[in-house]
Image (tube, helix red, strand yellow):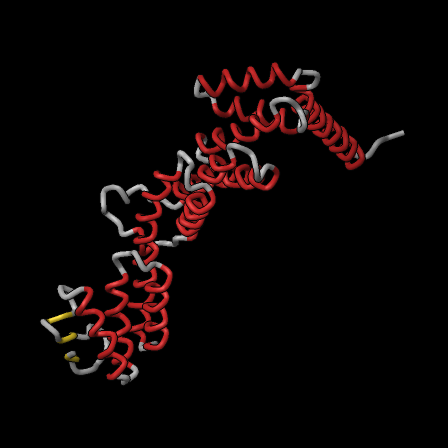
Length: 273
């Protein structure tokens, strides 16, 4: 019987697919069986050795194996903590945050829960950094600050829940920096509203900065934003009230000429207190 060329090609394709499937299956099985039968202590010793040697990817595979195979084992909790650190060292900020959040959720009263919270904040801190930030070649406050806002909230939670933590002093310093960055970011938004004529939105944004970041340096400029926003709304009495507060708190503000306010974006006459 003569076999058609089409049938021959079909059989060849099916055989090839079967071979590929078999290879993939063996690969997945081999990967699953890599730590089959390996004792928890051996996995942990190998993970510790890898961590101390800076081989963080190797450490992660062992620590993940402990987490999967021995979730209630002797080294389970410590492995979860060290996974946070290993993910951080490989700059996998999302994985580090997820591992920290999971540890905090599973072990809220653990003696090192403060460490997990600190590392979660630190991962967000790093995720929000920009390569030119240290050189002051960019203004980070003009960028998307979602990760930095997460870091700010985590560090504040750490200081609030664990004031005596050894990580609290560093967290407090980072809070000061992030508070100023986040406040400046809000003022960039308020400035945009002023330029677009959305004066009420600008006033509300300035008020929000003062209420939520009262210790930030940017609160003084927030007062200036509110003065200008009220001028745009033709609410000169309210503008004069805020101007008085601005003069008392920041007499050297760049919008002031003595006791007279010079609007930057609003088409309105200058205002004197």
